[in-house]
Image 1 (tube, rainbow, N blue to C red):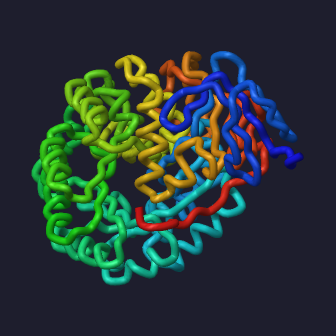
Image 2: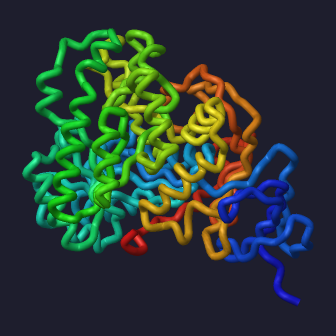
Image 3: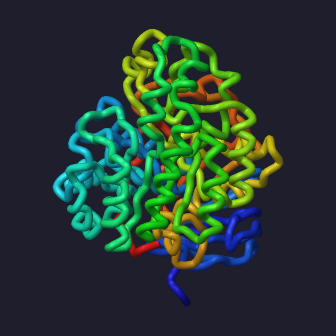
Length: 455
């Protein structure tokens, strides 16, 4: 008789192999060892049967998270960020190279990041490197050290230690990265357009949006497309907010250029018409635009022009987020959305009649593929990591910022009702979040991830 499995989870609805089916998922050694029929007897040390109303889905993979540790740990940190992730059904995050000090632009800085994350992580954590003017020509050692790619800004980042690349430097970075088969991920706003569009700020949200017009994204994305065409490098457009750039992206993809694109839950959940003046918890760059624009982003997700959704969790202290007493020019930009990204997108998708499996495609399957982790993450499959989530898609909950796990109690979603409740999160077959359990009751179980292969 074979040895019992470590864990068996029985559910009447499991998303596996691209479809929903009743099944029992058997776990051994942290990976999915077998997928059995729902009623099949599966010997295991622990057997969990999900009640009616709960479905079993793969853990969300969030490829865009600012943890800020070390250096700005008062903004966020690996303990709080990864607890927030687990509570939101996110089992893998990849940390951005800023706003930590030092930024992850050298192998030495990567070692500091890994040392900080290792004892604290409640979910699996990977790392992006940074491409800044001073690191050009020296990116390959970071790639060899296991980063998943390189983040670059084409306009000022907001922190002095992470300067942006000029158009010429963008081309140099793409040429260098093409040489070793890497990936450049780009904050695409054109600084000349931003300079021409600047205004005096204030509490008017419309004035803030006008200061970061759609043309800034269009022009910057055009530079990226030109660079990819010239060099053959892979590039990924971060946090697309402007639908006006979609035509150029569609044309680039039709041409066969290796470009992928993401958008974020806040661009799909909110619209400029409903953001009050002075409500700087909604400030992010590029900005949340109008309802018509939001509709076009959803259409682009459905037709594949936009490949994936990532949170761009970018927290700060409340003092910075509300600096200037409602002045959008003074307040720090960034949405703290890690814990709420999955239910927020599901809420908006459900209202549009979009099924849950499409959301999982954008937030688990395609994010894992971007990272080259699709053999082990983003799906419930034999041989994949047993990163699993029991999810109640029909249940709703009210968001209270002070109850969220991330460090500072600021949220653009505060007071909203969202659909979809994370009941249990398993990482490699171990429970890392259980609804109703006290904060910090479980030991950190996250692992540090390195790039496995070229996606």
